[in-house]
Length: 79
Image: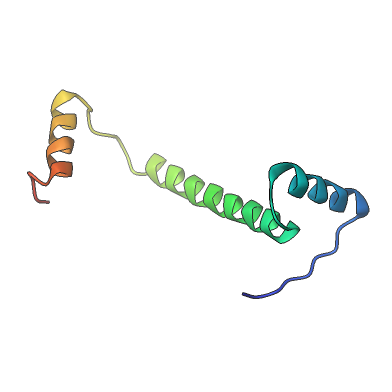
């Protein structure tokens, strides 16, 4: 695992320390890693949403759509 040192003003360091203590993180590094993972996940979700919005009109979703989806999930239908 790589190491990265960051500098924080005292107010932010105190905030991080409070979060570590109050939320059950073992270290400030665990807390910061979690924040970075959430930010990465948020960016990936945003990209997927934008991709979906740009993909054009959607298909109609009705009972037969869900029936086919269930059959596909059970392995009754091969793609």
